[in-house]
Length: 105
Image (cartoon, rainbow, N blue to C red):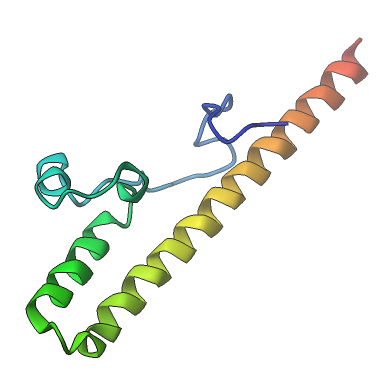
């Protein structure tokens, strides 16, 4: 069973013809200058920075940042779904490898 901190053991392109690599949009310097905690420095950090700057600009009327908040939370959800799909893919490929090794032996 693959763990949360395990590097994938299979080629990421296995079973795909084309697959876009995920890239960080927010730079390390931007995240450090905004003092983002380590747990928030993920693929959605650029949306969180936009949301925080909106809150700072519109305070005390933070309800006007609902769109930015929604964008950030949607990004977090999609990131979670993608990570679960990757976990499931790794689990299934490990099971397939075990099954093939058992049949070959």
